[in-house]
Amino acid sequence: MSFLQQLKVLIVDDTSTSRMLIRDGLEQLGIRNIIHANDGEQALKMMMSTPAHLIISDFNMPKLDGLQLLQAIRSYKPTAATPFIILTGKADATVLARGRALGLNNYLMKPVDMDALKRAIEGVVGKLR
Image 1 (cartoon, rainbow, N blue to C red):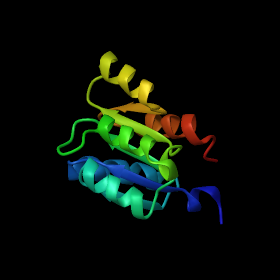
Image 2: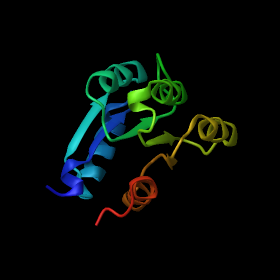
Image 3: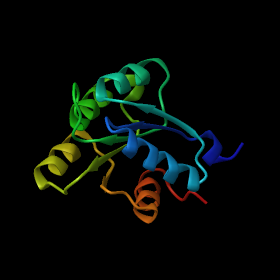
Image 4: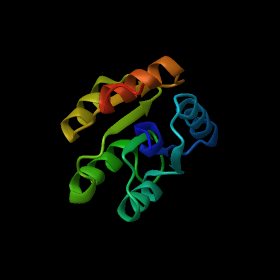
């Protein structure tokens, strides 16, 4: 089984359109093992029971925002090293600095295009092909 077939990605976004666009992009890259959560709280529960290898999470969400989710993921030993990419509508320096302090691996600007998605993932997990 190839790396892309094994890579399990969790998409976290409260907007179904965003989740579908990211899913489509991942599938175009050859990633098929994709799960999704509607908010940070649901994502955290999923990571506690069946962890993913990579999280791509929106920043602005109800219940737990992206940075709160990142902090929770980093504080739980079994998921502490899980690569985490945050999605944001604007590159807010404060948000990115807080994210980096919490162990953020990379970020993506919305709307996400294929090249940016591939670069962000490769920046975290290495070459996809």
